[in-house]
Length: 332
Image 1 (tube, one colour):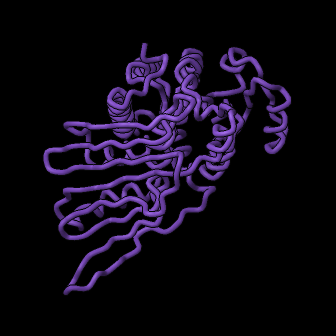
Image 2 (spheres, rainbow, N blue to C red; image 1 turned 30 degrees about the vertical axis):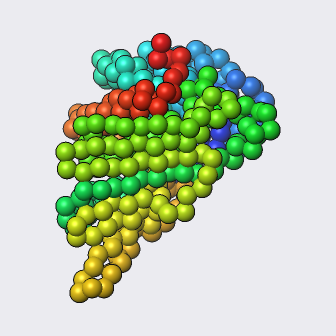
Image 3 (spheres, rainbow, N blue to C red; image 1 turned 135 degrees about the vertical axis):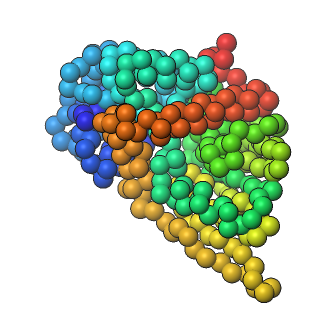
């Protein structure tokens, strides 16, 4: 399947590398608003055309699909453009700003027999299945804590008067949309949609949220989410049951997962998953994208499951934003 990329940041390089590992996907074109930047980016991948007109790329017969990694505010309009022109779309998280936008584009894709999916690597990593299968070993789960706190490389720029896209509310970005979404995905994927949500956020000079937290309340458990772009966590995440604890070093990559249990008064630790090579982190989502496009009927159940998870996460993200006072122009 021939695909084009929209966006020239490191995440696009990571997807291309993952797609190469997955196989069956061919980089056919690159889009950049700046011709020179596009040429510089694509020079690493051979002689590929660079488009500076998005409409021209969307109608091109050179491509079958698009990988979209532009700022969040453009995800909806760009995804819609490619879907309307018969192209499959895999879009970086968050796939849309609002759940209404996702519902609309999901219906559009379905009506045209196209794949429209969110590039959220944790959903397609082998460790996800292992995590689901291991939950029963820790007994009755009443508490979990998911954290993704990573000091942003752009934080200093903001402090010195610059306005990086990641801290620009006009781009529909901020900590929740960038990091917190991984915590939300983990909670919803493992435990479903919470009955009640309590959330708050801390705002930076630009008006973007720089850190925040949420408590997901279920009938039988509580899950605490914390996320920050203004500080670095070294503890990781935990799922706690009455027979043991699952420790997860990275909630976004699902790496270094350890099962901790107590036997005869002794604490026993069993490593379940170690580190994953960086080059392989996005190969799972790339492989799923190709699989869904090549055989939608054979993968119907998984496609519908993925779509429902994406929609539920989008709804939960909106609830958190509403409670925390995080608003974007697409909310109007």
